[in-house]
Image (cartoon, rainbow, N blue to C red):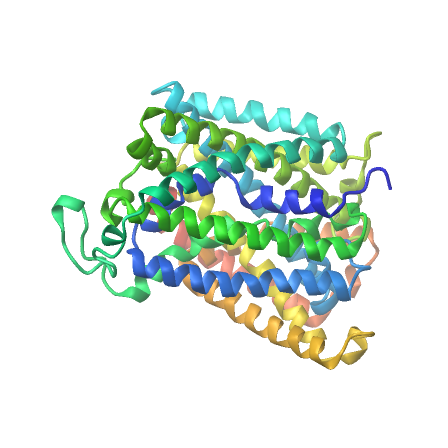
Length: 484
C-alpha cells in the first residue's frame, strides 16, 4: 500500500490534469467568437454536461470497483474487445497530443521572457526545447509514479495561487456596465473592437471544443485507479476535481468581461490572463501569470505523462494491447509504454513545426480523440443501469439516478461530437484506423484472432472506409487544418 495514492493525491492529479496552461488563455479562447451572454450559456451547458460525465466515472468506479483498467475497460465490458481497444487507442493518442499542446504553450510562454525565439511555440528552438522536456519527463516518471505524484502536489499549489490572485484582483475591479455592454454580440463598436458575431447558437457552438479541452483529464483518477488506495477514493476525487475546476474556469473567462470588451479580449496574445492582469496591475501581473503558465504546464505535463504511460500498460496486461507494453522497470513504472509514448510525443512535436497555429491544431486533435471515449463510458453506464444485478446493494433511486446520468451524459457527448464538426471527426477516423494493426497484433498474441466477431469486422471495415474519406478530406483541406 505504500505506493498507493489517497483521495487528496488522486484529486490533485485530476485537478492538475485539467488545469493546465490552457486555462491561462481562457479569456481569449472563449471570447474569440462568442460574446458574454453566449459564454454564460456555454458554461451552464458545459457545467451540466460535464457533471454527468464526472458522475458517470464516479458511479462506475463505485459500481465496478474491480475495473481498475481505466476508461477503456468500461467500453470493453459493454461493447466488446474492439470497442475497448478503440477507446484505449484514442485516449492514448489524446494524451500524447495534450502533452504536445502543453509543449507548444510552454515554449510560447518562454517567448515572453526570451522574444522572439519561441514565438508561437513551434519555432525550431521551441521544438528543440519541447523535445528536451519530453525526455526529462520520461526520466522523472521512470523513477516512480509515487515520486512523480508528490511533485505534482507541489505543482498544483503553484498553479492555483496565480489564478486565485487573478480572480481576486479582477473581483475588485469588476464593472457591471462593461459586463453587459453588447451582451449578445450583436453590436458593432469599433472603439471596443466589437463586431457582430451572428446568432447566439453559433457563438455557443464555437466555445465547445475549448470547454471540452479544459475538462479533459476529468477521468484522471479512473485511468490510474489501479494505484488508488481505495476505489471509493476514485469517485470522490473525480467530483472534487470537477467542482474545483468548473468554478475556476467560469470565473477566469467571465471576470475579464467586466473589465474589457469581447473584441478586446479576442485579439490578445497567449496567455491572455497575463495581458488582462497587466492591464489592471501593471507589468508584474503579466510576469506573474506567465510564471503561473510555466508551473501549470510542467505540472500537467507530468500528470499526463503518468496517465498516457499507464493506460497502454494496463491494456497490455489483459491482452487489449500487445504484451510488450506491460513491461515494468525496477521502480514499477511502465517502461516500454512510457518509451513509446515519449516517441509518439516526439513525432507530434515535429509535426507542429509545420503548423501555422500549433496550439489550435493540438487542441482540436485532442478534443476529437477524447469524444468517442466519453461516449462509450456514458453509454456503458446507460446500458448496465437497466440491469439490477449490476447494482447490488444499491437502492432503486440510485439505479434511476445512474440511468439518468448515463442518458444525459451520452446526449452531451453526442452534442460535443456535433460541435466538433464532420471535418475533425474524419481526421480522427484516420488516427483510429492506424490502431487497427496494433489491435490485430494483440489479438494474435492472445490467440484470439479468430474470436473477432462479425459485428467487429464490419466496424473495422467501416472505420477504414471513413478513414479513406478522411485522407481525401485532409489532402484537400491541408492548409486550413494545419492552421488549426
